[in-house]
Amino acid sequence: MQKLGGSELQAAFGGGYSAGASVISLACLTLLVLWDGPFLKKFAWATLVPGPLVCVVLGTLLNKLFG
Image (tube, rainbow, N blue to C red):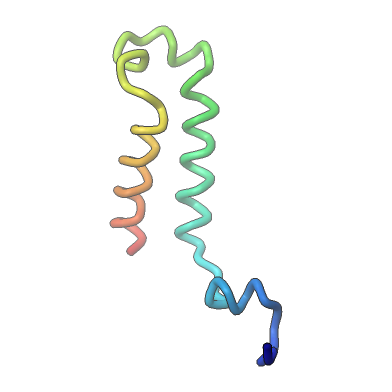
């Protein structure tokens, strides 16, 4: 396999850095951690809706915003 320059990770992921993807990842991870915390368990609606589903919706909306 011939290496054209740069690291293999850069070649695999296109070599670009996406600030939008970093913000989306950080926002969703923060939401997942806080979702199981005692603060949000006080609200009835937070127990009815699963946290990962909210993260998917949030990630989709943020992607539209950054995209």
